Length: 485
Image (cartoon, rainbow, N blue to C red; front, side, top):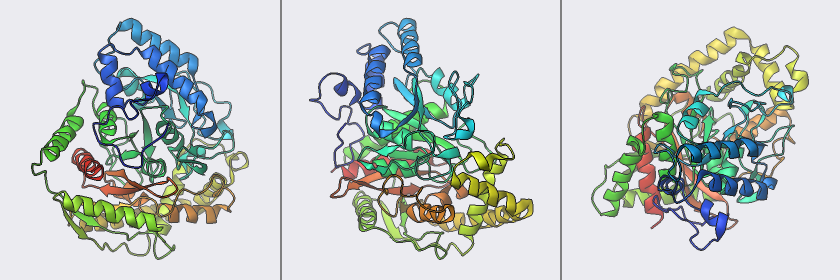
């Protein structure tokens, strides 16, 4: 599916009006698809068949680790039989897929690892899959991830790599890379992802999508402990902010749609279109990264151009935009690495797991075991102190804006060709602004800003205060509208 150079407007329900047949069907936004299903203009079966055909047509992108065509057809038929000609009111979109880190009833969860290649089908849904199944979605399958979701590129040793639909020689990012590739290629209208260090925002920026990382503990299916050891949250990937808000509403509450987040967002857009004053946000813009001075952080020219363009658009839209110079100290890189890799110690892995996993996962396992409990606890304590100090600095403004990626997504195989330690440092330099938001526990959204001469996307990241995912999405929608002209 072709994509335009400009970010689509929030109500752009049919991105390619002249496209024929199934392609035109899938060119509808998630909002439009839901409305057409609810009106009986489409059936779940015909949409599912179009999606399966698109998945086969784009098989070379490696978006899916497992495509469950039979299960999807059965589910679509059940929905049509239960609601003849009218889909359930709560349906947010006709079909989606889940990362191969999430249990889905009847499908194996392999975590992108040969260690779990023979995993049996899951007996029950993960709470996220259960919530979306209850809302009436059709599940197409499992999407490609890096091994155990560790990396910012979705390549492993057991499935084809997830490739970027904007340039299939390049990575789609990670760890929600397969999900992002499926959405960007037009196979899925949106997809749920998970984000422990940027795993939604990185592939969103790589593939030209909107990606929301909610704040820590916002969603009922996520862990709620307010600690830097609790890094991972669920969130949506979509073409537009409106579609992301639609899926986020379903994740947030099982009640009918449109929900509160989508309704608030639409009011903001309507106000802006009418020329009335929107809620003014004080926005601090920065390119400082906590990975410096340990790592050299060098921004590609389009990353800076995108940040400058977004700042100018928000300023013209009535927001108060200013420079921000946070002080991050010198220990973040070391302490984050220690806490991040220690997460593997909580997984139920055998003692000889290193012999059966890829080089990066094996290296992380060895270093985490060698660190020992005392060193890990000390690193977590320092990160807690760091988080309190940086939160206080960010509180000087309503929203902090940074780039998402420092450089363009590299070619597939780029990171895997490196030794594990060099690989990890190169990933940090590629994504120098995302992991800190997980440590801080704050909401953040990646918003596409421009396409460069190669057709590659460049995005900005908007970081909000605690509990502000809804107004943050409204601001992102305003930015989307301003960029669309």
